[in-house]
Length: 396
Image (cartoon, rainbow, N blue to C red):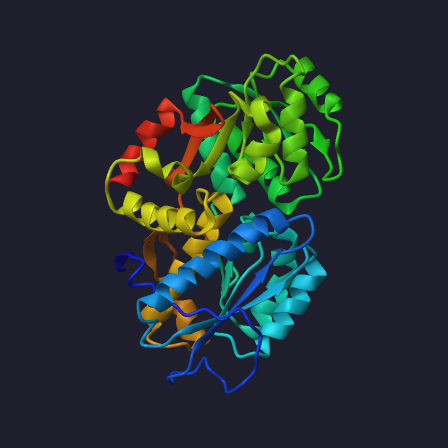
């Protein structure tokens, strides 16, 4: 198995965000390589999807500028799932008819899960930008996940809690979110292995706006910390209300909150909160090495183009393109089965960390590449524990 640190120059792809027809282009000829992207540009998940779209487009532009992949450009065909699973299915059906070599999937877990049966049937490589565990457990042959899964985040958070001598936790979760439900299940199943006991598990809904009932359960449970599994608006509202709830225990959020999309609306109420994130979110704190170089290649270009640092969701999109392009290069062409096989044997360093996919692991990213941070002065700052942990992998 080869290990590849892919540079921006080696990953050049051409972009055309149109859905125009024309001659088939995924064969091994001289035409552009067509890649589909299903992304939430409208609806509840638009804040995530727009960051995915920006970073995917940026990666594609960089790759194109450096000469393409296997001497060919890539045409990116973007479809909006409108933050709705049925629209993701429609988008996939449209893309499959456009002779795409692969599809980069939605940031919305429910959309991805609705689309997987079609992926299985059509046998088109699907690089998913959402972390729901059900995509890879069990393994679906053509589905490969980019963000660290919910279960992987659960592992990392429990490692941190154990290091802080915290043994009793409450876990609040959104029962309507596949990501949050998988995170809660993973935390509950893994907790005893870290010497941690769940003392309360209040459930809320995606539409919940008032969290006093959740806080009352935490207060009466003798928990030493509260872990929150949520996406979107509930994560913002809960954090703002927690700051005035009078609970004298730390609150821990996951990668879904690891961006300005959460920090900015929460504002000063975020101060002191613990937030897990991908390694790329705190790249400026890492020692020099291949990992920091991969992060810097994204961070500098993204800031230059868009005027702010790349959030978690941008890291995912950019990493997804890197992984897919490396697989196309390894496959030596755009045959879908050969791309799938190449992904399954791939090891690549990206802004999110080093992925090692295999026949039994289509997640590919270990907990080692997740940072556990505190919010200080409106920024994510690695805890001392995280700095020590990340140093072990960042300099490789």
